[in-house]
Image 1: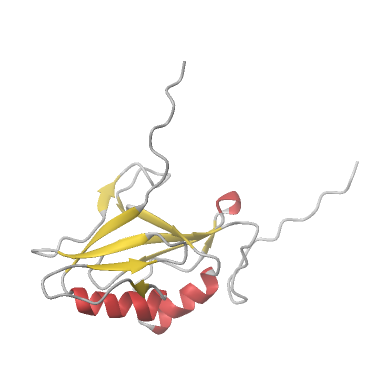
Image 2 (image 1 turned 90 degrees about the vertical axis):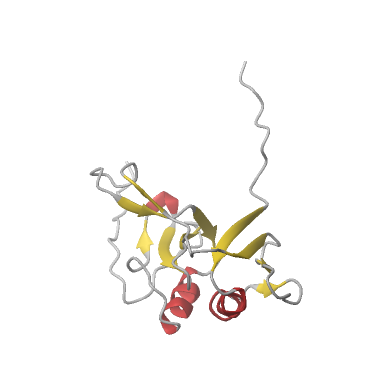
Length: 156
């Protein structure tokens, strides 16, 4: 008999940052997150996402960004700098625009991954790498993007 899953979901995430105040301003301005309570010197900050989940921005000694190298992601097995967190958005186009207007590094343009929806990889001020995706049923690419069109097959 299969064991019942004892973990339900990820409630919050802890992100290393070098300057908490600057990161709070960035997460508010670029991603639209809300600061939960006033900053205290030497302490971290809690940012609230639209879903109510929390992102903790914690001072990191030495500045070690959140990402790692793997050969298990790319189809050809080549090394890939992996994002450890994937966020969901309801408007990937607006997020992409906010990232670009703010000069944020993105891996490439929005990608249409079919049943996996639209995806985009980006980094915050400290080089923490993330992926964001949008459900396929709500997904629309920006007008300038080239998307292969699937022809409908005639009914038999």
